[in-house]
Length: 164
Image (tube, rainbow, N blue to C red):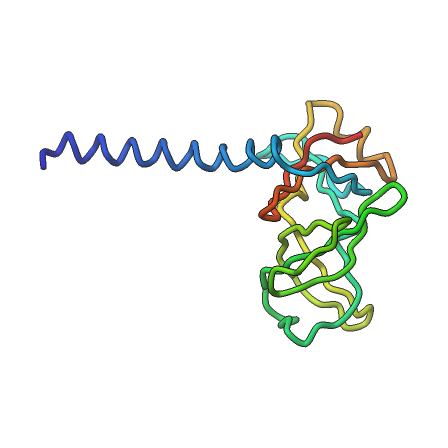
């Protein structure tokens, strides 16, 4: 095979990889179920990334102790969410994909650590950073809490749709 064909194949594969990463997010936004979460800001500025808000959700901390979860190593988990009066709340944390009732949905996350004192897992979902327009980060930082509209697809992938 000629060198030019090899280079062309490599370039096409890289472009396809980038489009697949974008495509997964667009699929989640278009086909995912809307979930309203309560969030609080953490940090509105980064010198290299610009203004953004680090978010911590009510579903970031999950009570309980599961013997199947290794509390000292990052581990992929499924968190079951149930619709409350206004917000969706965490109803359980599982190592394997859970069986759901009609009013439940699951989101994939990663256990960061287990707090032995509080007996809670700290879970991240990949939706903890939200980039904002220049000059709006401090306004969000000063808000104690706000609502975040998230879309979760049937595979458990979550994408932030908007901050309310």
